[in-house]
Image (spheres, rainbow, N blue to C red):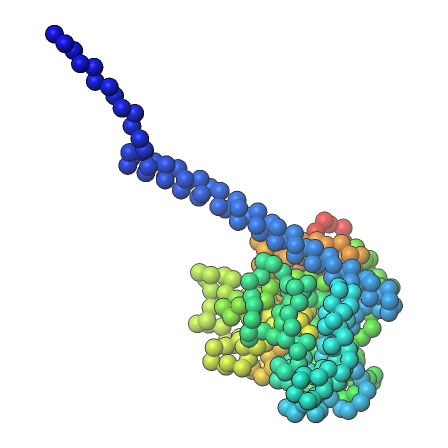
Length: 418
């Protein structure tokens, strides 16, 4: 009997089951590795942001070496015509409203934009703007090229905000201390304008403006005042110079869309009660009284946090060391008219997880966590209007380590690591 031998041919390819197993394994690996990749990318962005802060700190030191003082917050020409807010280009002036960031542009390799700002500038329509441009928060600024130019050196890579309604965003701001004091418009806005009245070219030496400004201006940056390193009596390694802020995304984020309330002037944590219980980072729109950026008040949308790097108003380029980083911001302003003008309790913030970068006066960059000691949130801010003994002018900061880091000359000793 003849036997035939059946040859077994090698199988080519995968079965459906094997293919599904391979796909499942790949899916599991992607699920495991993707968070690590995202974390690595954020770590790189955070390092880049830290370097930006470092470079800005170095630029301030170089500025001080050149001019023997820090760049001024709320600066600009103080001679010539009386500043007005008119809509015609002919009476445009910066109203001493420019930010400290303008002064450091030559020290961060941005000489080109410094030349545009510091000299008369033609916009191509036949009109020539005067040196230092129009008021940074006015409509005129929309036609002034430097004011609508965004600089990469002023942006954190982790912050996705871009474009309108902002006019040149910044993620870096000046520390103005642990106190502010303001009063209704056309009365006394000392923390916004310092010892200079907003609509006059002159120093108000014997007025309430100067008195309250000197009482409550406790940070390294004091609006419209010259400050030198020698004025930092608490130690350059224990005093914050600049720090990080997140820019507004139009999403009712409590850090970047400031609550508009006069109550903020007497109750430093007034804004804390209006958070969304399901999304604590955002406002509870069913209960919050008023916010600076409202979909029903369209023109105020341009006053979001960090929207104008060239503006010296606190909402754009400053912060307080009262509430810890990434807590709600609160603007002291009755209504939506120029909600950034009167200052308030604007917090440090960032798009990084758990805190924000700061640069100390000595140039060291530190990452301050959201959990830093912030003392007594029921305390009054330091001013002559305070009823608490602990909040009288010259007192140590009532806001813990965070508050103490924001003061330049309160004779405070920081014995703990931060």
